[in-house]
Image 1 (cartoon, rainbow, N blue to C red):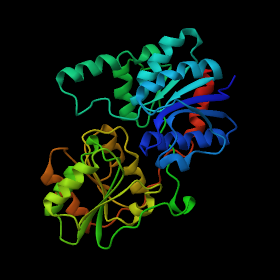
Image 2 (image 1 turned 120 degrees about the horizontal axis):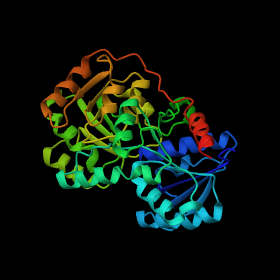
Image 3 (image 1 turned 180 degrees about the vertical axis):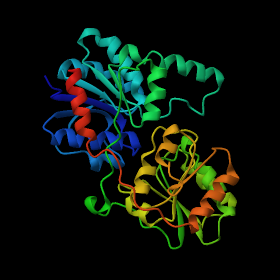
Length: 351
């Protein structure tokens, strides 16, 4: 038997890395002749243009997380062969489905999309989170991580040592393949950030580093999110209005990455940040905080970029200054060209 019908789900298409990878995989699964259905709270947003032809849509009525409870009825009606949980943000939904449907629940495969250890958790919340992770083996049939280091950590934390695979995200399409959906950068040397404007990403650190950078260097952050007003206030208070630009979400960040002097990712925590691989694929060096074990896996060669401690403001500024003048690395091909096929082989074994 094979997983002829795959059901997956999301809250919205606001432009996060989880949903970007989810849609890339869905497009390739459809291309392989499988039926794919997306249960979605809000089908609008920046990624709506990336919805692949042939993808079935099941509206959940609202983007709020609680609307995902309707997946149980959708699953019973559609009878998919397998459910794909696109990130650990959604594993509570997987637990609900397993509890609600019991033996009628098809196999569930979840992808690890964010950090196992969260820097924003205190001691009590961290302990509760570890207890929650330890339950995942009860309701997930298989776990997919994107690098060996993250897979090892997750398998232990979730007690799924024999049910974990390593499959990278499919690579972002090259800019020449996807048209002109990118953003033009302003003149001068640019430090580029790509990601949602949310607390996890800590774009405030990048803005705070500007006084330590040469006067001709500007900062551009591509993304949208709840912290836009706070970041705009920070920029205005520091008098950086002419040096910091927040154009919003762009469909194709690769042209901007190729034009930037360096890409920065100053996050508190990450899973496997695809923006680092995308930047390196066009020969742009990266400066990132040690926000995940995967960061040092991706930036394993010192010729590719620098990894600094999250709270090391001086180290972040020094690394940015180094790569503003250092030779650019040779492009590094992104892994994952066969990822969609590897997922399908895994799905078929579970079905």
